[in-house]
Length: 226
Image (cartoon, rainbow, N blue to C red):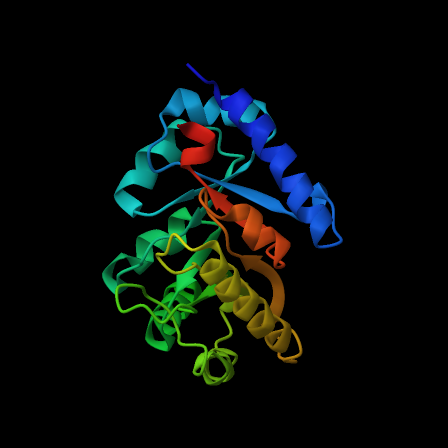
């Protein structure tokens, strides 16, 4: 059986090569380990390798893992968040990467305010314009940022997106390139609670392409824990 250690060493080598193609190095790319299908021992093995950032798609899956593991780990919500689950998400996670509507941002802001905290978030962009995906359209993201910028208990730290469901790597590359262009424009927005630091794009099937096109955070599950 291939170990988490073996998988992660291969990933680091591939990440380093992809980063070099975009004029960067391995240290410029953050790995978020997606624990959807990972066991507690596997997550502990990943932590022993130096991974400290983990992501979950669903609150009900995250809750027992977070309770059982080292409290020093950082957890991000990366799946679609229903408004009725916002109070739990604000309490559980260090960041919510999947803010896909202004209404959801407002709900997060309200709950964070009640807890006297500033909630870091990423705004999800549906760059591939696929109906089955959530997120702001590329055309509406800038207006959305303007509306969200007045929310004092949220801090927007970047964007998150996914490539289209296609086997064609060039279609994925085009989506990542478009996402990077949107991110670059957003970085010029001067608002107190908007700091475009993280471009979260790239998963197990396409993280190398994403990094070549400018991603600085990749969300990897199967490639680490398979």
